[in-house]
Length: 294
Image 1 (cartoon, rainbow, N blue to C red):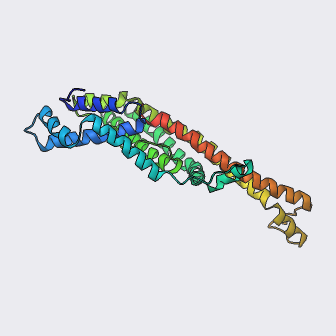
Image 2: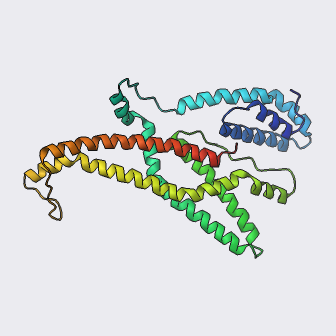
Image 3: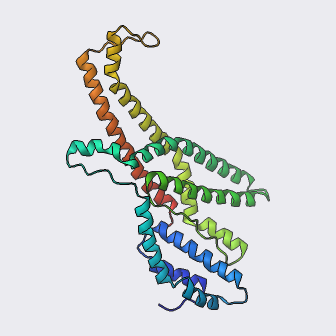
């Protein structure tokens, strides 16, 4: 591979060297490389891009070396961040109840509950931003407002990516796409508008409200029903001791029925944990599809 003579050529070669890797990793590597190269160029204004790159290739590394470093670092980081695997369960019952020992389950559970809050916020932000952008489009202040709104959408997509990665364990970008430096101001602004990731992020924010409602409703409903069933023997024992609940609610379930409900509640609770973890995995792929530039 020839020695790059411009920053764009260096980034193209780095992208080719990372071909086949996770798109989130490629975005992070390209951001770090471009930030370093442009910082070097700014510190040495008397040097041309070609001279600066000759120096950088000897210090920072050529694209193939940098790509190899990122591949190795990714393995190390993912190994360090990955939660410990629960002990292997050979029996069917062991695998079923072992979900409670998986830390990813509780990350997914918390995300399902948080999704309603973030979904309301994202949806409100997107709808208000779109409405105001359309309403102000006829005024001179409409243009900077639209640009600012699109910028916030891209920033929120990065924040949501960090939430998804920390709770669901799905690799997401840790750096934003590097802002374009070449061309006129309007061409750089236009590049932001034609970037598929911008509109994918906006669609994701709109979709998070119905998704958040579904996740929250399913999680709360199944957990509440499973806990109510599990406590059926306790309610039957309290009723046997002539203890009445608030509102004089009388529990009229015989002991075999109460024990059966308690057993069903335990099974339903663990089934809910499996459902939550599965929803977390599915949503992680949805987030990658909309928020990560392929």
